[in-house]
Length: 617
Image 1 (tube, helix red, strand yellow):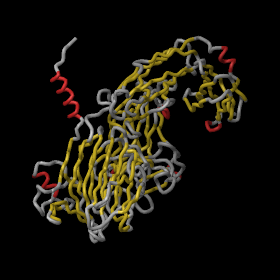
Image 2 (cartoon, one colour):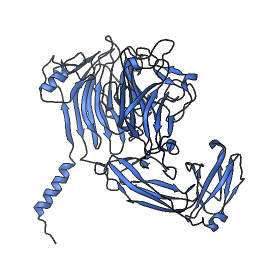
Image 3 (tube, helix red, strand yellow):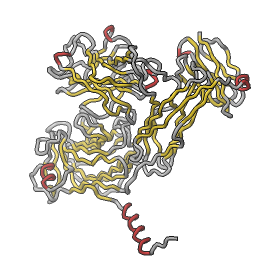
């Protein structure tokens, strides 16, 4: 046995305790700055790199002033100031943001926290209005919070005295809290929300803690406040997820017209922060072939285009996109190449919606995390004088992009003219993933469907042209494509494989790709092999289940003992539905999938399976 001295043990214990001590990352009471100086300029001169402005122009009109108030220095913010405090893009750990604000009588103020900081392309985590309703209407004595949802909380605030605010952000547990202390009173918890949401609660955007913005927003006569005693403290020690997978490869042996499933268990047992993942089945690329297909939602926009724009006082960048999950192109374009993309950038009755002499920038993005795009796979800029005002504008890539199973994003970025109508939809009905939008050259994409728009304008008028021989890709899919795992928790993903339409002796290979926020395992690849045998489906299992009526007009009943799950595949082998059983009779509605042949894979509690064909008339 190795002997360890008492001194060594004490040093180890002391080091462990020290690692958990709170760490003050930023402390700024403005006292070391000269009164009358610009905040960001004075801060940088003192050797600090945390203050800047919205446009990242220290010393400009956006930069606040160091003032003296009742014998103490503080920040003085008036209309036109847009003071940004950089927080380092922290994504793991527990943090406290504390500061004091004093609003003079009849004035108002505002501050926010940002998940991403990029000017107009930022992503907001929280917005807090003081003596305002959150709109153009002043609300003296009232504070309003947008955090995890619009108008998530309101509370009373005061004039002419220092109010204390504490924002507690636990990125590890994905939760945040807003605390308020009135002068002479005890601290009060105002609101708790899911940290990874944006401020409006319309999208999950990740747990990054990027920056704060202090901004008097309304007008020169009413917007003004003082800021003091800011601190940014890391409460906990270093944390990170630690994701492990129960399999390193999957070898499935399946009979003709049969199916099976394998569970991948993802564990975060040793992690000290939430573990996030995104996954897809990568089927690889094809070789040769002259097949052509189009990735597109909706109908031809030239028949009934809906043109939409923002009401702005100055031109701004807008990026629109459509997202195509691997399942949408599995039967027609898997392994082929996107050679060009198009946007229906046409002129409306009120004129061309783009700022003069600004281009269209087309991009193809790979699948990312949190329902957002990842890396840019291709980009092409179309100059203003080459934009087609009456039809589709096409961008042909110098290098085609292979689509192998990931969720592919097709996007077009433009500069909208003031009150221009440059966002074009097909005028039909919105379909899931058919339209997204973001503003300012960054931040999170949000749905452009009726849940976020003023009405349903249909599908975004954007599409991609694909060339190349498609490869077989309907034989495997995942039960879900993303998830989050708390500390000590697990998540499960079913890998569903089927031999529908395949013959004995066929062998198919693919890789299951996981992208994670685990710094030790940012990408995990699990090889998947399907071997088709000539064995018949278990006759006992086949006879144990009665499926009727067949043919059907839509509804069928699966009758038998110990039914666990019924998986429904279309004639192309794509999984279209999974129905969990809770008794001996399971009703399956096929009416929404259209007429044709479907395959019902019935699995009992002992893992016996049977596949039966059902015809929908």
